[in-house]
Image 1 (cartoon, one colour):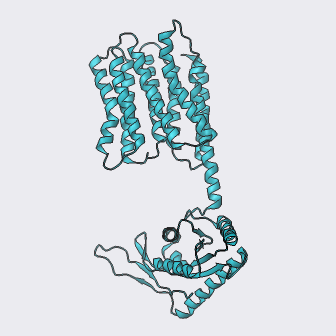
Image 2: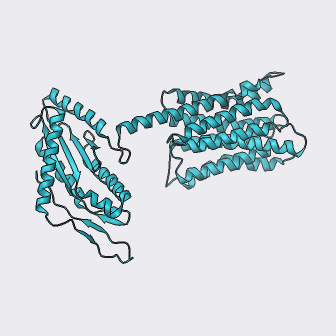
Image 3: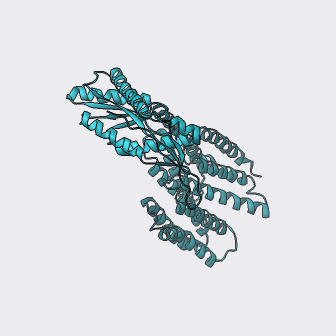
Length: 447
């Protein structure tokens, strides 16, 4: 056994455990394939311990080490593309792992015919192109064409260099690994194009990792007795691991900031962010001598939805209503969830009371249409209160109070008009015999 590889194995194993601990605590995208990739890199170092063993054990250890390193790099590259959930991207991952690992095992074996290597090189170079062309109508992305280009160049390079009697095996093997980790560098630069420590360290680490597969064969060709220290060769791996951990921590910090200002269920601004934006809107109106409007919207009979269909259906209804409201207002306006079933809308300049009433009527019309929640059709109404700055109030607190009071007045008027209990009536069964729909009737508020 080569015990000199043991410190590297321990270091990578500890970094993998640290990565797993950080990834488990956050919602970072791509962390699971990254973790699988680092497990493969750890297995790569474990196999290096046995690579000097005589006979079949040493050959198997060499094949496992190369396969784990190649598959781990392919996973890193795939996990950093923004479209990895696309089905064709998953096919691309399978093709890359299968063709790359097969080729590195073949090229490192003795007695493999040249025509077999040529066939493997052609498949390796053309597999991404074939998948891209086969799925071109459904999906297309410039980053994928970059991947296709570097793999086509790799296939041509392999067919040429693998014929060299002495250096062909080394050049071909390093060429495959150089291409994979160069692809990792390109993908992380594209996906994390931001000036943060995690992104910069990860990009530098992958560049260094890829460069080692270029420096090693060049040093062997240009220098008579090249000596590249093992620590220097493996240093980029540790840099990449640290960079990825920082990326996860940065994503977790950003996610926590987002949760502090947004409602977790609907993704809308919460009361804290709502008040900040309302303050800015009033300040802009005050400076420009214009008007801003505040709409406070309270869903009618939301409790009946929860009691009848369950809290999960209530959550789905809130998400649907938030999506409907957000699609109806301007980008400059703000829709926020400020309570359990209460929403608030800030209408910034240019606006006035007439526009605010038109917007509120438009929102009520959206709620007149039945909303499908799971297998049910749910119809809810709402009560809306409108307050205009500076006509109704001159500060935030007074404006919110005015809008709340008018909303409650409209809600009381709706209840007085609809003295009958809320109707919960089953809709006729469909031809397929599906579940009945739920109709919740409510009155429309006055303004």
